[in-house]
Amino acid sequence: MKKEISELIEVSQFYGKQKDYTLGGGGNTSYKDQDHIYVKASGHSLATITGDGFAVLDRKKLQAMVNKKYSDDPQTREFEVKEDLIASRIHPDSDLRPSVETSLHEAINYCYVVHMHPHMINGLLCSKNAKSAVGDLFGDKGIYVPYTDPGMILFKKVLKLVEEYREIYSLDPKYIFLQNHGVFVSADSVEEIHELYQYIDDQLISVIKERLNISGRKINPQAQDQMKILTGYLSGKKFINYRFDSLIERFTSSQITLSGVLKPFIPDQIVYCKAYPLIIYQSDSLSLNSEDLERMFSDYKKQHGFNPKVVLFEKGPLVAVEESKKSTDLVLDVFEDAMRISYYSEFFGGPNFMSNEQIAFIENWEVEHYRQKIAKSI
Ligand SMILES: [Zn+2]
Figure 1: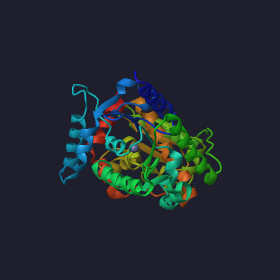
Figure 2 (figure 1 turned 180 degrees about the horizontal axis):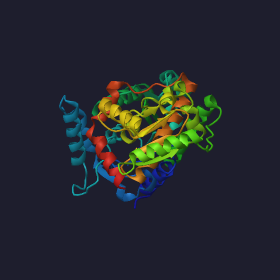
Figure 3 (figure 1 turned 135 degrees about the vertical axis):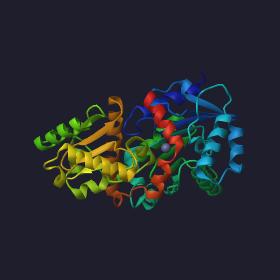
Figure 4 (figure 1 turned 60 degrees about the horizontal axis):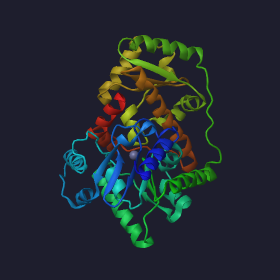
């Protein structure tokens, strides 16, 4: 194996294993030489990735996609793009599907690209002051990209901003900050990738001062009763799991604090947790019974078209509702990540959620659904 590929695997696993950087199948990495790009395949987890988890693509074919005319209909367009990505593989028989963010990796000239959704930087990128704070903390080291639906449109926007940056500075940006999404960090060596991530951390800590310190909590007797009723109501239908700690306690303590997590911050949150949690306020839950739950679940389904994956009790725990026991842990992790993002956003003017249109685009996005399906099976 080429030394560069072992380094790519090493750096992928290093960040992939840390929940502070990415969760589930999220995030992706790549290495490129003159002719080929090795990019994480959809559905593979960075934490455990090996050489077999990277799709190898012909860069010339990818570059040809820039000027190709695709359909104006978003769903058709993304399907066509996906087909072209697959057709760019140098091993056509391989069943590896290149990450949907592959084109973004190709847009940057550095050899290594490590894209993550770290909650601390997302605290900034999902805040009201995202743009100005990126400017203050990172100056001309990178570019800031206002939220754009993922896929071809995002790629075109990033490419334009990278080209403008190149024009001014005669080099590529080391950082690409995507609003309500995450960061692309790029360099010609893995050492520099580590230095660049460390710099992000140092800059954020200069504002935040102290990292969140989360400690375990026990739920109160009333919440225990509510959990029993919820467990009974869902038994035989769904798997549930709950978590309670100082961060969850902070967000579920009142209607005001709950408003900090009512809507999603980043596309991955919608993929794993659905866009909206079902909230059971204290006024509803004092004498909660299964008929109340039946009404709440069916109102939720009527409004959104699907069952909730996350239930939050005011003054109680965070609950995951899933098809399998295993998936509940990921739902809890991803939703607690959203709480961290919300917490850190307070240092930058407060939370800025995705808009209803942006949420709808993700909900309809077949590519994401595919990834979710694969992520569950590994
Ligand atoms: Zn991403």
